[in-house]
Image (tube, rainbow, N blue to C red; front, side, top):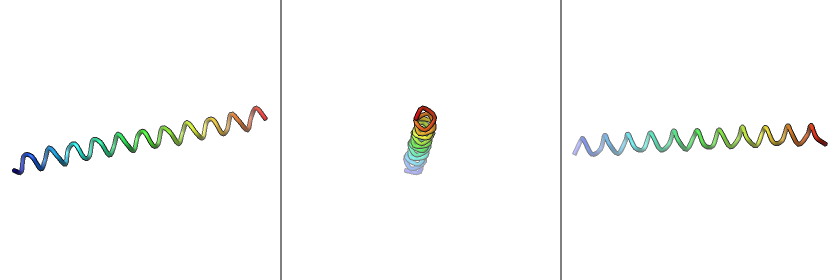
Length: 41
């Protein structure tokens, strides 16, 4: 039982960190496009 719980927590942490990386990457990408857009106008 405890083993299943630890595996579930591990998967939860991995998925949350992966989601956070994707969100941060999306924010950086949008920031870059905004800066590039401002530079071209």
